[in-house]
Amino acid sequence: MYLISPNYSEIGTPNVEIKNFPDGDLYVKINKIEDCQGEDVMFFHRLYPDQNNSIMSALLVLDTLKREGARVTLVSPYLPYSRQDKTFVQGEALSAQVLCKMLAHAGAMKLVTLDCHFLKKEGEFDYRGLTIKNISASKMIVEYARSLIGLEGLEVISPDEGASHLVSEFGGKTMHKERGEYEKGKEAYRTIEKIERTFEVKGQNILILDDMISTGSTMIKAIENVKKGGAKKVFCGATHGLFLKDSLSKLKGMCDGVFTTNSIANSAAAVDIKELIEKALV
Ligand code: R5P
Image 1 (cartoon, rainbow, N blue to C red):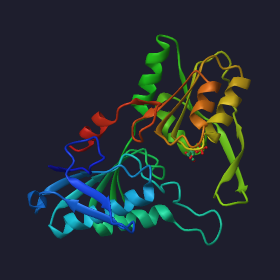
Image 2 (image 1 turned 60 degrees about the vertical axis):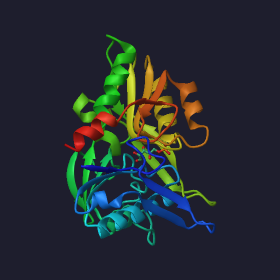
Image 3 (image 1 turned 90 degrees about the vertical axis):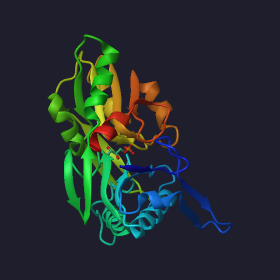
Image 4 (image 1 turned 90 degrees about the horizontal axis):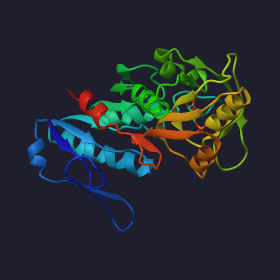
C-alpha cells in the first residue's frame, strides 16, 4: 500500500505539500502522484487541531487521488464533529453526517479511526455512505493505568452512559451524566448539571475512562464524585485529549494521573497508537 502523508505528519516521509495562497485559500500538491495511479493508497492525516482547515485539505487530497484512480483509505485517529451526530433542538446541523458524506464523496473508500464518538463498538460500519473502521484504544489505556498501580486492583468506570461500551469488557460500571440547556453567548456549550453514581467506590483505585476529554468538565465532575465517595487513587484516561483552556492542569491537580493516546498531540499522551493503526491496515 502506498503511503500519503502531509508535511506535518509524523508518519512516513512527507509527500503532500499543503500551503496557503496569499488570500488564505489552501494549496495542495501530492508529490510523485504517478506512483498512486490505480493503486491502494493509505492517506494519513490528523484532522485536529485546526479541524476546519485540516478537513478541507483532506478533501482536496482525496479528490486529487480519486482523479488518479487511487483506492484510498483515510487514516484519521480522531474524527472532529463526531459529537454532532444527533440534534438536541430543531434547526441544528448534523455535522457528523455531513462530514462523512463529504469524505466519501471526495474519494475516501474507508476511514480508519479510533473510538469514534457515534460508533459505540469496534468493527466496520457504513455511516452515510462512508465505510468506517473503528478501533478502540481502551485496552491499551487500561493496561497503562494498571502499570501505574502495580499489583493493586483497579476499577474502570465511565463518567456517562455514552462511554459505557468502553468499560464493559473490564466489568466496569457507569455513572449517569445530565447536561443542561445551551449557555448564552458565542460558544455552543451545554453545561454539565450533574454526574451521579449508584455503586460504591470507597477504598478503590479508580480509572475514569472516556472517549475524549475536551473542556474537562465531565472528568472534573466525575473525579469530584468518586473522591467524595472515598475512592483511594483516581486516574483519568481517554482516547482523545483535546484539553481545552487550562483543563489539563486542573485535572492533574485533582487526581493521581491523567493520560490519553497520542491521537491528538498533547503533553498527557502516554499511549502510542501506531501499533493499533498498523494492525488495522492489515
Ligand atoms: C460526551 O458524551 C463525550 O463522551 C465526553 O464525555 C465529552 O465530550 C467530554 O467533554 P468535556 O471534557 O467537555 O466534558
